[in-house]
Length: 501
Image (tube, rainbow, N blue to C red; front, side, top):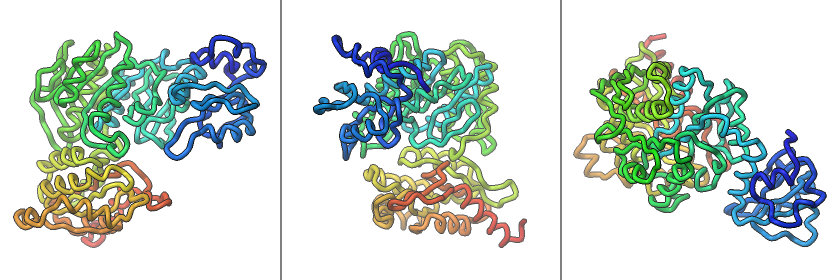
């Protein structure tokens, strides 16, 4: 894509220094893209040298130039004879975001972008918001953990929120008038969505996660808060005030729209009806009541629905579109996804829950829906926040009848050591008093199969942690692995052994 000259892009992004750079001959060359990986830099690109944990992208500037880069943006000063225009900036990540928005013509100004942040619930809320927009007659894309869906095309998601050039390219949207975007704390801290204009922002909740990156809960919250600092004054900030951090956030937003189940708020539910078939309740809004009939299951989805209803209401979408949009969403991959059949004698659920709070919500949702025991299969990821491992063990121990601890994505860690750290949350005394059983199996396939084999009629088996993921990271290898496929294979074996086809 040839969009403009180096001079034009730098000026639009506010990166041109006053003075003589504008007339430099190389600034008249046409820009074809914005690159941040020297291996992907091509002819006509502006290369932005990002500082990483292990290396500074400025070290790869010559490689980018040799591949045709027209200009370099870096936090380092230009070396002698850099061969192409070299602009030094204070924050290369901010420069990358502003350059990307300028290069792609600020696509977020031509659509309604709803940014959704929080520890849990982002994915389901984004799918609900998109469904509501579609029933309002507005084509809506989704950027998020499960994948990026733009104009009917699904693209694999490497990050929940892509790097800035990919965000802006995706927002071009080919006819989309809206986008529901999951905005991760990493993306906010790393400025991937700076330069994006949000029509609304949603805060779902804040619980322990990603402390390996942020360091502490306050830093984690401040990263999430950046999304609301970026809102235009007239844009609504949709906030869950049942969450203590949400109540704090609501005091600082220019146009807060609050929702809650247990506290007074702008948008609240009436009596709730739960079952494995879904949810039924009414929602009280400033514009009147909305009737909710949803196939989504459990109390956490009440909050997700309230978030989506609040966003739709705040953006002026009709109650009819809100009701129909919520009702139309059958399920979200890997989010309380029931993979057993109606003729199975047990229920098997796959879920992405990978924090202690998410696991607690999942188990509390499943408990009243189980006719028999609750069996939980889960693990913890390697090279990630280790403090949550015993906490997840304690939650599973307290709320399950049988716990099977296994591998998640062990990455560079010893999976047996990860399992041992999870077990520290499970005390011998608690185990004896409760009469529960504990199994540990490093092999995740074996663990899932064993849990389904051991289940009795009426039991509910939860497989938590990986959800929609179709891979497992072991060491340096990314291996094909899908909890849904493995669980269905185990269910098939169980049917064969019982004589059911």
